[in-house]
Length: 82
Image 1 (tube, rainbow, N blue to C red):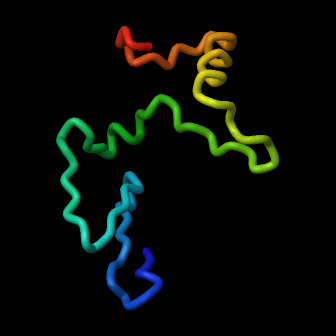
Image 2 (cartoon, rainbow, N blue to C red):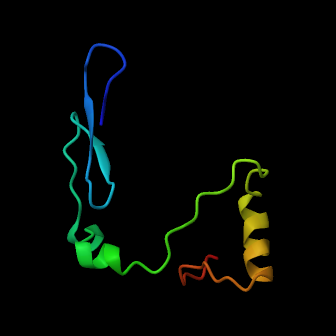
C-alpha cells in the first residue's frame, strides 16, 4: 500500500478482503475469534457510515450516551460499569 516516508524502513500491507492493515515491521497475530471470513464479511449487519465532513465533530462520550438513549440505541456491552 505505502512505504515509510523516510528511508524505506517499512511498508504497509492491506488485506483486500477485510481491509486489515499492518506494517512490515509487525508480526500480526489475529486470534480466531477476530478473524473475518468471506461469509462473515458478506453477512455483516451494519457497516458504520462515514460521517459527513461538513458537520461538527461528535459530542463528548457522555453526551453521545445521552444521544443514544434519546434515540433508543443500546450500545452497552452488558457490563454493570456502564
